[in-house]
Image (cartoon, rainbow, N blue to C red; front, top):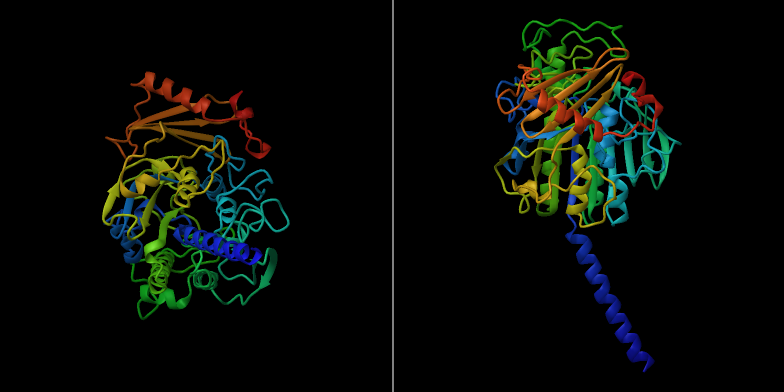
Length: 468
C-alpha cells in the first residue's frame, strides 16, 4: 500500500513539475533597450532626413511595430527611468528631477515583480536610481545581475577605471582598464546574460549610455566618419573645447556623434542576431526606445542631425521634442510585422504591460495601464483619457495631453503662471499657441493638471514655493 502510494506521489510530483516547467517556458523573454538622449529624429524610420543610417534598429519596426506617439517619463534621465520602473508618472513619482537620491524601500519596481514570478533579471548600463548601500541599489530593486554605472555623473565618462557589478546578490566595485570603452564591456555582459539564461524566462534591461555626451567613441568606430587626413566626412566641424563642464574635448563632434549612433545600431543588431542564433526568436520581445529627447551637450548638435525631426524642443523641454520618443517592438509570432501605430501611451504603462505579458501580478495604485493589445495595433480596452508630465529644474514645467490638445504650464517663483496650448493634429511642431483663443480648453486642461499631482514627498521637488 505504501509502495503504491509512493508511486502515485512520485507520478503526481513529476506531472506537477512538468506543468510548472511548461508554464515557466511559456513566459516570454523581454529585452528592453533604452538609448540615452536619442532624439525622435535620430532614427531613419522616424526621419528620412537623418544623416546617420540605423538599419538594425529600424528593422525592429519592419519586423514588428513602430509607434509614432509614444512618450518618455519626462525630459531628463533619473525621473524618466523612475516612471519606467515604478509605473508612476511625475505627478506621483518620488523622483521628479535629476538627483542622486535613491528610490525608497517602499518604491517597488517592475524588476521585482518579474523576479518574484520566476524571471531571471539582468541590467547592464546606467541605473541612476540609487547607489551602493542605499535603498535604491539595483540588487535591492529586483536585479539578479547588474554591470555598469550607478549614477548619471559617472556615466558621462566612457573611459572610467571602475564600474559596479551585482553577482550572487552582492554589489561590488569593479576595477577595469580605463582605455577600454565601457559600452563594449557592458554589451559583452549583456550577451553573456542572454546565453546563460537561454533555457529560462529572462528580463533584460539595457539602459545603454549611447549617444549621451561625452562624445568620445573609440578610434575604430570614429574612423568610418573621418577622411584620410583626419577631417570629418560630415563637413566643417566646430571643435568642442575642454573645460566646458565634465566632458572632454572633441575636435570632430559631428563625426563622433554619428559614430556613437552607428555603434548603438550595430549593438542592437548583435543582440538581435544572438537571440536568433539561440533559437529564442519565437518567445522574445525586443523593445527599443529612448529616455528623453536629444541633448546639445559636449558638442552635441541636434540642429545639424535634425535630432527632433518635425518636433519642437529638446532634452529639458516638455515640448514634443523633449518627451516624444521612438518605440519599436519586435516579437515574431506575437507581434505582426510592418505595423505603424499612433496610439498614445507612455513609460508608466510599461510596467503593467510587461506584467500582463508575463501573466503575473502588478501593483495597486499605478498610473500606468496595460497596452499589451497595442503591440498588435489594436485599441486597448482601457486606455488613458490624458497623459501628464512635470519637470523640476530651476522652475516648474507641466504638460497635459488629451487627444489632440496639449497644454503646457510654466511657473517661476513670484511670477504668474504662463500657459501655451497646441492642437497637435494640425500643429505637431507646436508653433501656433492657441491659449488665448481657447480659454475654455485651457481651463479644462488646467483642472486635469491640478488633479494629476500630489505634493512631492521628496522636498527636493517640492513646488509649493512657486505656487505662492
